[in-house]
Image 1: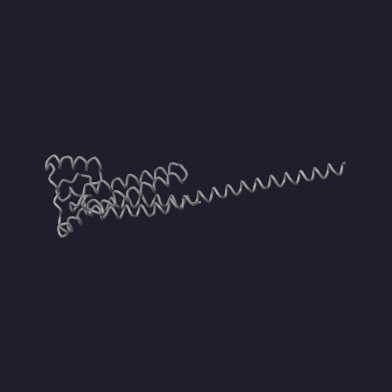
Image 2 (image 1 turned 135 degrees about the vertical axis):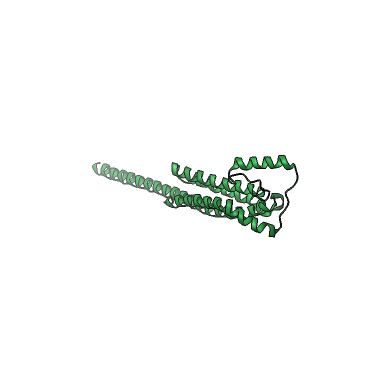
Length: 205
């Protein structure tokens, strides 16, 4: 009887040990899978941000040049693409970062800075057609000032369409506008983008 009890006890002990070990291993596998999935999502977010931020930046350049010429969205493929494809892609990339990286003040600050910089590019882009008309606001990247300048222009000119500049006319004017407005706005965006990219790199662990 003692032998049976000893054998049974040993068997139960072994079975319990195997069960505990297997549960521990299963938990480890689950944690490893969750970590891998989390890292994969973060890598995807970084790749998407890298692609979208560059596309937004360079798309803004081409689109703004068309705007300055007087080629508004109805007649500019660059502007249509920038507004309907490139900008939504940037917003998606920001949402993906917000979802996949840990919450914290630094992440929020970096995302807010990028959003603000992207918004200033949008304002400078909208201001561009006003430059040949000598109707530019004091700050070309200030949304409120740009909107006010457009309202003033529309009140004065009614529905008269903008004149489309020739490429020759555009050249010198674009050079000045780029120097006086767009270049500094793009540099501010590049700076915000680089700081967010640095944050993402440091959190891919």
